[in-house]
Image (cartoon, rainbow, N blue to C red; front, side, top):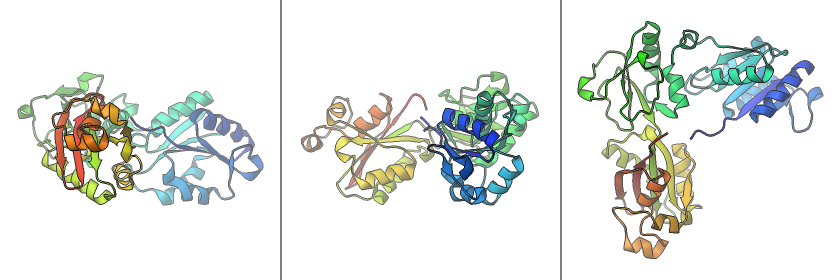
Length: 344
């Protein structure tokens, strides 16, 4: 599941401070205020532009209780792209309007604006075209469903097709997207019936999309079970993950977690590999792993680790009992198995 978002809230005036304080408290955010306003655990600043520039990409969302122009001037030098920029919301000091200013869909600013408006009692201002038309936005749906977007450049094309009133092809046999209003989509579960070149969305945890024009979404449902020798480095683990997934036609973008035996909880290479994958590692007691039925148990591993399986058992536990989609593979130093969770 996605982690809780980190929010920075900024107060510049006395009247704005009261609202900013409520927003920070109710969102679990960090409140930054001018020195004369600071109370308790608030963080003081002298230059808002320098403050924002120093940590802009260190937060998932920024809420300015200030004029929109101030926010724009602070964030403008630090923008990278819609796939990297955090959410930015701006409120007037009375809380009448909460404006989704940047990264409305992928960054979550539309949701954050709605949340701030609920706190202030005001109105969220959302200007993204699909939202204004009451249509689903594929980048927003992907974010809400914990999916990775394989080709971000296609989002604009499929959203434009929705705005034109076209129904999109949808290949999603696993039902991960949960689109709700099916009138906007035509289900194409059989790949042979897919019409290449026409607007469509392909949802899969495999590298099996036949159409470069389709928007590719990857549900984060692949759970990695990893075993390794003491002292093995991150590079060796990551290389085996990449090569094994590629050979099995599994998408690297669908990785949702990494698990191992508790004895490896302090293994630097394993921890670094998890960080490189963008997941929080989970470690299981050997007795829990030993209770899992696996296709390839190892007596030698059982004698050394207290469980006859690390990789396969950890993958299955992490997938909440989901099936193995790749049985154990190994190098001299690393073992890897992959199980699929039923939901992302």
